[in-house]
Image 1 (spheres, rainbow, N blue to C red):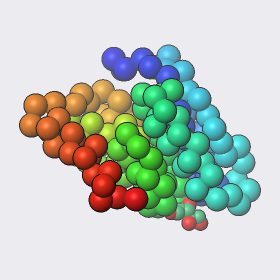
Image 2: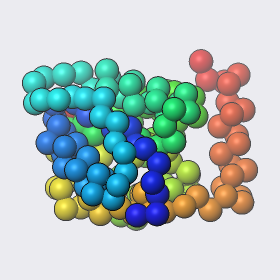
Image 3: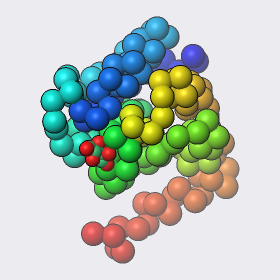
Length: 152
Ligand code: RB5
């Protein structure tokens, strides 16, 4: 992997097992992983962990993060409420690639009840390695910062 910056990761109970597998996968590439939980399959609220990871990225402490819950839907909704966060729910390699190239996604979200470990690993590999293409896509992203007066 050419990407070597630390990654913040979090999940709820529904994706705890997948989180552990993705964490181990990232570590094999010498990527430092900050795991904010959960640490077991005991029932938990995805919001608590989505907030932790989104805050880490929103504040600039981490350039990128990974969030996992049962479907990935709840984590995506939470994370995208934070400034400067562009969370992408990806269940295909194509989505992961395009979310980096066109949307400069900085949080990858997947559903542990939707996909298996093998596909999840390849999605992570693709998302980590793909680069933002800038140019016209950068101009589009600038408009995110102009939404303040419309979004409360
Ligand atoms: C937990 O049962 C489930 O609702 C959660 O993991 C997630 O899928 C929410 O979006």
